[in-house]
Amino acid sequence: MQLTPAMRDFILHWGEMGARWGVNRSVAQIHALLHLAERPLPAEEIAETLNMARSNVSTGLRELQSWRLVQVSRQLGDRRDHFTSVEDMLDLVRRVVEGRRAREYAPTVEAVRETLAAAEADGTPARVVARIRGTLEVMEMFDRWYSEMARLPQGTQLTLLRMGARIARLLPKAAE
Image (cartoon, rainbow, N blue to C red; front, side, top):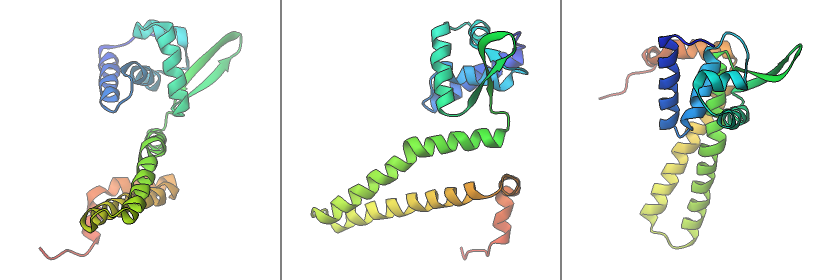
């Protein structure tokens, strides 16, 4: 696959962004290439295009599949797997957020919940227990909000996103 300078810049930046989010740079670059590709790509072509070792590409593709960010397909007359990225950007973001929620946020909420129960039983000072409880309440509130938003139809989610901060105009003004 031939990359234009803009495509190279996109792939490089996606890799940097991934690294900042704790995703291996190569994995993020593979995802970026598949996101831009106009057709499904076999692993060999991904490796050649990105100048990566074939083993790194295989490992990266497995990770992307575990996040449900890429799909595998077959083509007639070709024994190789071909890979594509989730095309719908809202679906892609939803999968990333849900994956991060399941791997990071939900376990943290559970750990804070267990810590609160332990703190209430082990003589932890009341002020500290209150701080832990407040932390848990806010984390659970965000989680409930996310869960409710995720249940909305995609069209409704897009409408809310497009409204952005304008939705604040519909709310009563708080006294300053």
